[in-house]
Structure formats: C-alpha cells, structure tokens
Length: 317
Ligand SMILES: NC(=O)c1ccc[n+]([C@@H]2O[C@H](COP(=O)([O-])OP(=O)(O)OC[C@H]3O[C@@H](n4cnc5c(N)ncnc54)[C@H](O)[C@@H]3O)[C@@H](O)[C@H]2O)c1
Ligand SMILES: N[C@H](C(=O)O)[C@H](O)COP(=O)(O)O
Image (cartoon, rainbow, N blue to C red; front, side, top):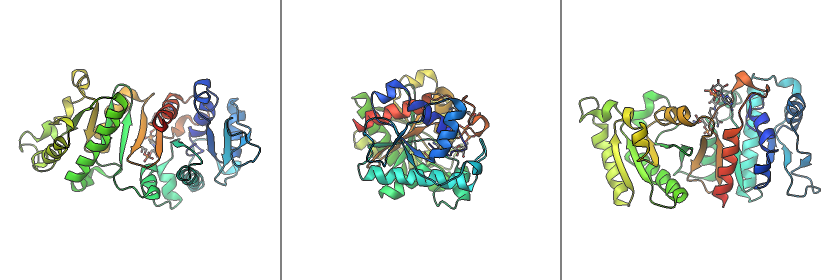
C-alpha cells in the first residue's frame, strides 16, 4: 500500500473492491492494518476482513496482512516521516520474501516516499533498487508503459550530472534487450525499438555533444541489431515523441529518468504502469507518487493502480 501517509492505502482499498480485479486475482493488502482501517472508515471503503496469516483464511477472498508497526497517532494524512518510511519499507520487503517463496504470485506496489525511506535509514533509493538486491538481479531495468507509449530507462534514480558518467554501452544494450523483449512478448511480434540520443538533436554529428551518440549509443545499437532487434536511433529526443513517430515505435530506450518519464506521464499519467524488467518475480507499480497533497481525501484516481494489478496478472500468466 506504499507510504501510509499518502494515497496508497485508499487506492489499495478501492482496487481490492473492484469486481474486475477480484474476478481475476486475490488481493492481499500489505501494510499497517490499523491505518487501513482508519482510512476505510474515513472514506467509507470496504476493508478486507480476512487475515493473510490466519489458518481461517479461505485463500480466495481479499485479505490484509498487518505489516509495519505504526500507531494511528503517529500518522497524519499527507505528512510522511521516518516511521511511515520504515513501515512502507518492511511491507515491501515482506512482500518480496513471500513472492520469492511462491506464497504470493506477484507484487503490485503503492507509492513510497523516497525521502521517508532515507529518513528511516533504508539503504535503497526506491523499490527497483531493493528488488534488484533482494532477488540478486544485476540485469534489470525500469520500464513505464501504457497502451500508447512505453519507455525503458538506461539510468534510473541518479542526478542528471551523473548520467553521462553512468551510461555504458552495456547499460544501453541491456535496456534495449529488456524493453524489446517485454514489448515483443506483449505484442506477439518483434517490437519496434527507438533508441534516443543523449544530446540536443542527437549531438548533430558531434557539434552539440561530446560524441556520446557516436562512441556509446551507436555501437550499442549495432550490437543489439546484431542480436536481432529492430531498432532506429539514436533519434533526436525532442521530436522522437511526436504522434507520427509514436505510430512507428513500440518502445523507447531513454538515456535518463526524465527523458522517458516526462512524455510517459504527460501522455498516460492515469493509466501508466511501472514494471521492473529482468527480475525472477513479477513486480508492477503505479506510475505516480504518494500525492501527499490529496492523501486520505478520496480524490486520488485509482486507474494506474488498477492497470498495475491487471498487468501483474497478465505477466503471471
Ligand atoms: N511507485 C512509487 O513508489 C513512486 C512513483 C513516483 C514517485 N514516487 C515518490 O512520490 C513522492 C512524491 O512525488 P511527486 O510529488 O513528484 O509526484 P506525485 O505523483 O506524488 O504527484 C504529482 C501530482 O500528481 C497528483 N497525483 C498523483 N497521483 C495521483 C492520483 N492517483 N490521482 C490524482 N492525482 C494524483 C498529485 O496530487 C500531484 O499534484 C516522491 O517521494 C517520489 O519519489 C514514488
Ligand atoms: N521513477 C519512478 C517514477 O517516477 O514513477 C518512481 O520513482 C518509482 O521508482 P521505484 O519503482 O523504484 O520505487
């Protein structure tokens, strides 16, 4: 359910009561139950009565799993702190343990507040880094995806000033492989992959760059082409997302976080899904954050969470 001071709990409660969701899966809401109860009462949302750990649970109806010790008087709507950060971290960590042990089939994460994890001394920036560590995965990537656009990232949660130094031919090839394979599986045909340049106008043959398109991105494209991927690029990033270009592209390989997530969230904020590619388990997420400014008010739209659940079900197969 993500950070309990944010919109995650109300979205989890809402989705766990949607017939299209419960017809296809058994939702288990993981986090502090007393906070879920308080929000369910405040917003008149149904609270699953079953307990995931109880021998009485039928294994079919939606359930709660009370993880992350925190008292109601320690949480205020819209105010994260180290306690909410720790509670959300232990819930995700518990979900990973259960999924690795096949007691859960997939993880759908609600939004966490990265600063709250940091305040709680959690040594991971976000879910993606935690999942990679816990599953022992080095070849992973973040993809945000919807029916109209998909973007896979070569670098993830790092400052812009560190992007150039972090980009490697291998990180670009990895993103092409993971994103290309994910879209090929979904579309049941070879995906059309577009790799973006790093610099304005893709460097314009070195005029506006330090040669990254020629020395790094071009060779990565050639390597992946040799592996059979259908690729164009490096494309000038500013025109890569026009409607005409989007008609010809199934997945964009983006050099840094905002290069991909600005177009994705502009076009698909309400139904975008974040998928961690490369893991041995299925993990999807909402594409939005904790939305502290509207938490516990019943204003948050649940469509991204619902799409994330549906995609997780599809990926489990
Ligand atoms: N999956 C995740 O865990 C995840 C994803 C993105 C951001 N975050 C974290 O969330 C925190 C806040 O990030 P932010 O403020 O940049 O972005 P945000 O997505 O929380 O909020 C941006 C704007 O969108 C609105 N909004 C967000 N979700 C909405 C919803 N479901 N319905 C209606 N309106 C919604 C908010 O009210 C706000 O005006 C940060 O700590 C960030 O790192 C977490
Ligand atoms: N980069 C993601 C986004 O903007 O949607 C978000 O920070 C979530 O990251 P994790 O899934 O690693 O928590």
